[in-house]
Amino acid sequence: MQADLKGENLGRMHYTPFKTRIYAFLLDYLVIAIYCIFVAGTISFVFKSFLTPLFSGSPVIAELTGFLLLTLPVSLYFILFESSKWQGTWGKKKMSIRVLDRASKRIGLGRSTVQTAIKFLPWEVAHFGMWRLIHPTVFSEITIMVILYVAMFTVLIYLLSPLSNKKRRTIYDWIAGTKVVS
Image (cartoon, rainbow, N blue to C red; front, side):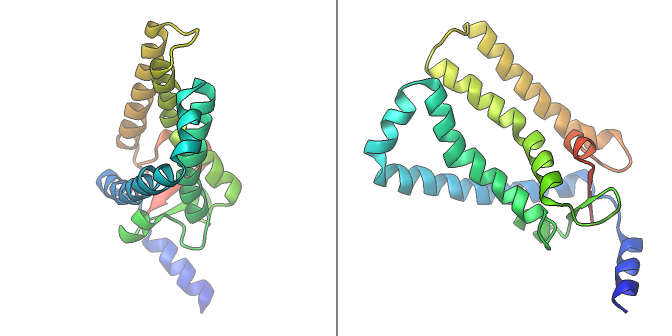
């Protein structure tokens, strides 16, 4: 009976429309924003004397601190939920979509990590550029602007890529071997 239901559900799956994926990400962004407010408000207030030097010194230390406080927890949110039995984040769950591998099975932790790392790479590249603008280093301002434009262009490609194929897969879906289905 269980196998029949799984087979029956596989027959009804279809690739998620772009608009639905955007709505799911916006819902997830709400979770991210709440977390960021928590970090900025609570943790920064409580640990201000400890954190301020970390963000005002070296751009490498500032970026690493930002990565540990923001990027890593947000990435873990995506990695752990998308590889879990729920097969998606809270936003995906609310939009009734899930992440699967090419064989329509739940993705593992490794595949989820690859997908998330590629998905958030432009975000981290933008952080790299912003910290170098705030704390000038050996990079020229033109170089930093090129880095930031490359990050923005990559995000644009990520956004447009699902519109270019029937399966509505993004660049990071292709690379990680994942698909998002309803």
